[in-house]
Structures are given as C-alpha cells and as structure tokens.
Image 1 (spheres, rainbow, N blue to C red):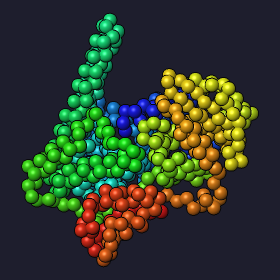
Image 2 (image 1 turned 90 degrees about the horizontal axis):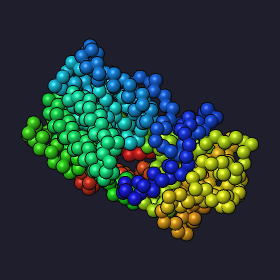
Image 3 (image 1 turned 120 degrees about the vertical axis):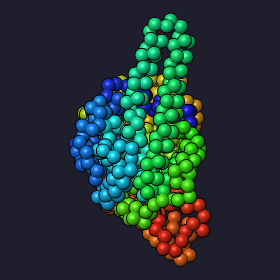
Length: 507
C-alpha cells in the first residue's frame, strides 16, 4: 500500500473520537443484539472464540524443555494473536496434513526434543507466525496458496527456526533497549531534531535486526527441509508465490506491493533461499507430496468467513445481518474483522461499520452527538435509503474532508465514512452512490449466499488455464485467470497435464 493511500485510510479511522467501546465482528454483534465498534482502531480488538483445540505434533516432550520465559511470553500472547486473526479454523483434513509435516520437521530439526503447539488461524490472509515457547501459527489463506506439502513445510520450518533461535526474545530485548533510548531522547535531549534523528536511527536498527533474523530463519529452515526429506527449493518457490499473490492483490487495488520493512526484499530472500537449497540439496529435489496435500484442502473455506460477511467484487453482503451495499467502480473492497474498508487506490477511502444507538435518538442527533471530528452542523440532512431512515453530514478536520452517512436498519445503525485530502465532485458522487446502494436482503437472496471453498479438480484433455479459471465463482472475472495461475503455480497452458490436480474456488 502506498504511503498516500495508507494515510487516507488511517484518517478514516480517527474521524470519530472516544474511548474504545466493546468491539466485535459484525456477525458476533448480530448474535448479541449489540453492534458496537470504534473508529479509532488502535487498542481495540474483537471478541473471538479461542477455545477450540489446536494441533499437537506427534512428537512430545517435557514442556519444561522450553525456557520458562519463552513459555510465559507465548502463553500470554497466544489468545491475543488468535483473536486478531479470526479465531481457530477447524478442519480435520488440514489439521492432519499440518501435523504430519510438523512431525517430520521436528524429528529433523536441531532440537527434536522441543514441543510445538500448532494453530490454524481462521483468516484468508497469507501469513504464518511463531511465538516463544513453541507456538506456531499458519492461516488457512496460506494453506490454500501453498501448492504442495513441501511448500507448507518450508513455511513451518522457517517459523520453527524463529523458535529454536529464540528470535522473539532477542527482538523483545532489542526493542526494550530502543524504547529506553527513544525515551531519553524525548525527555532529556532538548533539541527536537536530535530526538527525531535518534528515534529514526533506533527504528532502522530494529528493522535491520529483524531482517537478519528472517534471513537466518530462512537458512535454518532450508536445512531442516532437506533433512526431513522435503524439496529444499520449496522455500524459494513459496516466496515467489507470495510475491505473485501480493502483486495480484495490489494490482486489483490499483497499487504496488509494499513489503514490511522488517523483512528483506523478496527477490533477495528468493535468491538466498535458492542458494541455500543448492548447498544442502544439490539437484536432489526431495519430496513434494502434492496430490495428498491438495486432497487435504478439498472443501476448505476460502476468502471471507460467512460470519463476517462477503466481499464479492464491489459488493459487500452479510447473510446474518441481512444487509448489502456496493462501492463505485474503481474501488477495491477489503473485509476486516473490525470494519469493511474500500479505496480507489489512494485518493478516496471508505469505512463501513455498525454501532448500537438508542432507538429514541434520531439519526441527525446521533451525527451531532460529538463522535465526528470537525462536523459542519449545517450539513446534517435527513433522507431515506431504500425504505430505511438515514442521515448524512460533512466534516473537515486537519486538512481532510469527510462525508458521513448513517442508516438505521432494524435495531442497528450502520455508518459510511468517506475521506479525502482533495475533495472533488467525484467524492460526492461516489459517496451518494454507495449510500443509496445500501439495502436489506430478501430471504431468497440470503439463502443464495454461500461461502467460497477450495475445490480440487482434475485437468481434462484439452483443458486450458482460461477454461479452468472460468469455473471459479465469487471471483471478479478479470482476476480469475491470474488467481488460478498463482494458486496452482502455473504460467502457461503447457504446465497443465491431463489428470493433474488443480485448485479452483467455488461455492
């Protein structure tokens, strides 16, 4: 995400002020008959179910084998991380596949006595994490992107390396030291320029330290892959797949990839991963176990969890709340655990969420109740949107222009907030187009809403990338072909062989 777009979307978050109220996902709020959310994102977290069992590796050991400090830190952060990533995803086939891979990696690792706790996170994001004490995490989105068991093993071996190398503890200590330096610079040094330079220096130092950790984990992970009998080149393949997927997503949003500063550039990591694989594996590719791995993905949830609603192209639909709306052409929707976000690539950003408002309070009074920064009182207007009462207003704050709408549907009030630093007629047009698209879904429409899932099909004689991608549903027509290619690691029709198993997305 470009800096300009990130700032536009951040501004949407602080247009409303106030302390964090109990926040939650839209679906959870519907079940509780209370939908409260906060427009200041920092420090607010939704309530998630973290009580589901996680995967235990086949290799067991005395928990005391892990340093007590590691165990304490991991146990403390585990619930928070699970909450942030949608809870635990339960899928017996996928759990068995992950457990088999981890079991082999543990046996081949530098510390086979260590115990690991593996959690599949219910998130479509492509990500994996490690916490001290043997806590490993992989998202279902990452499982769906991996093309075979060796690529999953590459990711998990990398995360295990963070654990065995005690990277989290080392980074925590470095961050604590940096915090002390920054505090001294801010409170003791009288020159603000010196303070800013000191903070920038410590931040860069932390970033370089994190990069060194990532590269070290890559090296250790590739060696573990080879010892476990997996293809050591899988690490480089999956890094490339992640880069292709990031480019695909950002292209849809009208943006360029922006990798976290704590990670080295992907081309550098790919080159180093290939070099490490050649050193440990030579030309012996090892095991990939593709067909068995893909079979474990059959039926896996893909994309948004139904409890959070569905972002389908430019439309957002929520079956449990029974609502829907559509953003203007050129906007890219992103469904998060706290709100639905949209952007046109950097100039205009939108946020949609829902709140609990007393039924006795009118919508104009709610707009004027103090939660909108820089509200222009004379701008408040009442209207009706597809039979539902609504109100709109404008606000200006710190150089940003806002258009806000609230719509009452049933016992809930839903909020649209558009923000831009350069207001034009397009802002008003897009704002009203989106607000007027808000509607209640009919029972038939709700019944037709089904979650997307990963389906495994076999390539038939004469099948092409276009034909197989055309079988996808719930994906923008323009994205089906490139998404199919990324998900299946194919680049031309020559890569497709009759009888080959491939992934598609279907209801």
